[in-house]
Image (cartoon, rainbow, N blue to C red):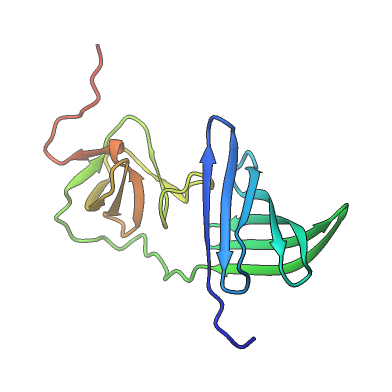
Length: 184
């Protein structure tokens, strides 16, 4: 003990199976945990069941991993060792984002490069476009934004009210460009 802990997990969704899949590896064990699971309908709770080998106890271990998004700035993770019907909590993690106060009355100076195309509001995500959780807010059509980074299907923008977030690239219209939405 006394060594720094390093871990890396990957979580993905397989639409043809309608299930989440994940892997986990860390510096404490020389094994890979492979897990499968589901997400709640509201996108706030992901429950994964994984199997691995415990080299210390020399047995196959079943893990239950529960990740819950409490609010826009708080996420919890609980890891359980499952033996039959008995679940033993072996790790708990609480992640809190420290966000500076957003001053909605403060206007950001341009130049603004794009605006939110109508007729619908565009949802935004503050830390990235992870659809496994609900968006943090919505921009109204006509909201002026500065394009910070185009990342394909999602772009990072800064709004005139100072919110830096990720929106669907298709919701953006270059200022001065006619609306791309056409009606026949």
